[in-house]
Each structure stands twice: as C-alpha cells, then as structure tokens.
Image (cartoon, rainbow, N blue to C red; front, side):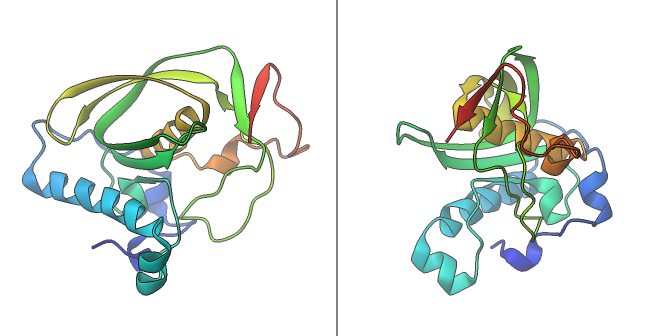
Length: 183
C-alpha cells in the first residue's frame, strides 16, 4: 500500500526526469504499482482512511511521484457534474488540444509539494489523450474542465514538469488569455 512516506518531495531528482515508456503488455509488477496508485487516491479521499493512514487527499498521482520513473498515471476525481472518474493508464499521451485555455481559480496543488504556491496555472481547455489501460486496452479520451487539468498536471510529471513551472512569476494571478475559469 502506498502512503505519504512513499511520495517523494519537490527537489527530488526523479521529479525532474522524463519518465520511460512502459513496455506493453505491462508486467504484473507494473500493473500492481498502478493499481496501488489508484488505491492511494481512493483511500486518500475517504476521510476515515485518510486519517487512519495519514494520507493527504489527492485526485491524481504519477509514478515519478513514488520514485518510479515510468509513464504511468492514476486519476480518481469527481467532475463538475458530480460524476466519478477513475483511470489507471500506461503511456498517456496528449495527441491534440484546444487553442482555448482554462485554469483552476483556486490554483493547483501537488502531493509532492508541501507548500502552497499561489497563482494561476494555464492549461488547455480541452485535450485528447491516448493511452493503454490497466487491462491492456487502448483508450482514446476527450477531456475538458477539471479532468483535462488533472490529466495535464499528471502527464507533466511524466515529463519532469511541475505545476508551478507554468505560473507567471511576474504576475501569478494574471488571468491567462482566452481562458475559461474553473471553480
């Protein structure tokens, strides 16, 4: 079971590396790791389990955050309409994106970053992601809103990019041009 002590912190070199593609079909070991990443997110969102195991609530997790430099992400999030989405993916790739941007009005946070970093993080409003799920099926997702932002945040981790790299250093609360605010 993954706990907070397994999550590496900002400044760790693995967080700045480009993660390696996962050879497919995925090994049982890689599937197990991905399954545990999803379990962490589910447990972290359950107040009783989060307290019992001292888990910080998260909605996305990338393998580099647990010091595994492989292209694997887990997402467990409720969208703006209250619908639950759970993904466990190998080798996710953004294959296309909108010109239009979006950003979270509350800013972004990260399980690997222990401090609050205020500012708007410009993201694409809509993205299309291709990946392979935990069962070996090809998936082709069209995402918008919060889901799009979470996926971009996690895929950035696979490329050694942290969310705060996107914040305008001169003016952190500068509203990105042509952008949809997401509450």
